[in-house]
Length: 451
Picture (cartoon, rainbow, N blue to C red):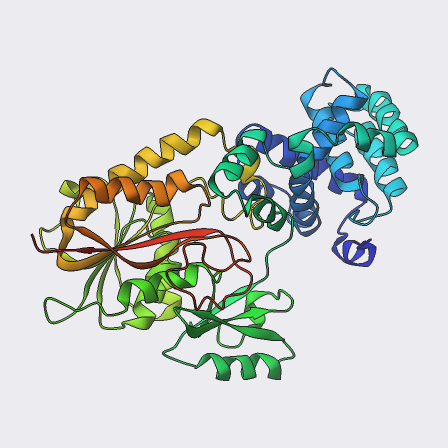
């Protein structure tokens, strides 16, 4: 049990942390992201609540299945959220952040001290005491429940089984493990080897990762606050997953400018990590960064300011070029399209519970619309890199196959295809994937042929 780590996060009585964690879970149930819900938690509670919320979301499927065994009819939503939170945190001794009996006692206390749950406290107490007595039998009774077994919606599991028949279980298992902290080293300031030495001088250990076969960043053995990273405020390093670090090198490798400088578009740019990476690799490039949300554009600006690079940032819908395009073709376009985020479940375990099966087709339609709108903006001989942080083929391989069938001037260059978590490239177009652990991603590099 991680009791010592949990104790270090303890900012308040455990019952109070459990109340707040249950409120986060309830917000997710109503369609709000866990990140946004945690931001509403009082600051003194936030570190502990964040840790508990991440764990609860990872094991929510099992928790709900156990609750259904304990009470066929769900209690009122607030009490149900607390009950399922307690079950998610305590269903296995080796995963519990506190002693299981402590979690149970404090969950009951949380119910007693909450005005909207006080009447349900005896019910919560009865359910959790029965759980302690009959835990093995209850777990056995939930084994045939797909959602309980894999802690993902049944439709999600079924889609992965279809899309990745040899890898689906590994993808689901990877989502249950916290992601490592991975850094992208700014090549304008340091080599990766030199930055690793600077980290080690601060007592921070890590290992080198690669993108496009070249050292690109460092995966830390243990996460640290960004302010302790050497040169972070000066833009010497950024936090970025290993899979996402492939985007800029893939687009830029061998790309020639039609004019005096490369003209690039980052079509769905927020929060600006890939925009910054493009400019780290090609500081003289003329980069236009778009995002439909003005507030998210502010995040892009903050990121490029920290990196001390310049991009033109415009709040606009990339799918409607008539509102923002100046008529000059681009040498390269990066389209990191909106998607289900099914590849980043280990970083955002709430996503699996926020998504609905119908979202896949709806998002695939948006991706197709973006591809159709942006492809005419690529000059002959130029390139478009399409990527999503998804492991669903409807948002990756199938999307691109459909696109090239309808656009005979589009040539697929060697591309990673679907990167599944902690795995080498599935399409084997690029065999030098030395990233180690990484999120799920899809990449397709398209070149426009002269017709």
